[in-house]
Length: 108
Image (cartoon, rainbow, N blue to C red; front, side, top):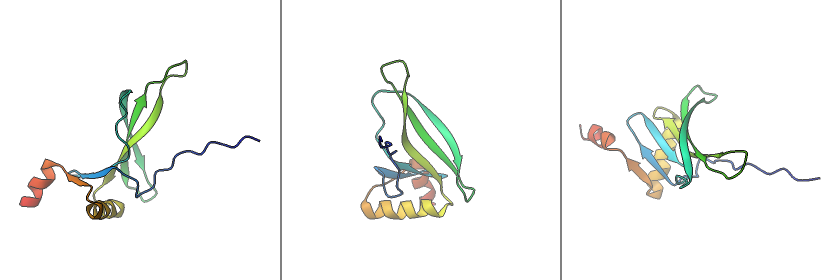
């Protein structure tokens, strides 16, 4: 019997960097693929009711079936406990980026 191909699972500690925006914490999972045709955003709600945004790249593929999709980033709402944990973990690893708007808000 042929074995099923396992899908790649995204773990909470897997990221290139974490970026903090005014309303969201962006967990960047992969670099943007160079052969991406376009990007899509998908809204997903978790079991606790928090709204997440997934950034999905559609990658070109030769053949009849068209392109395949690749998850590039997950946007977590700032008030979620998971987002606070990601910020703390990224600070420890030195991979935290902040947008200009967040820097201005912190100065006030």
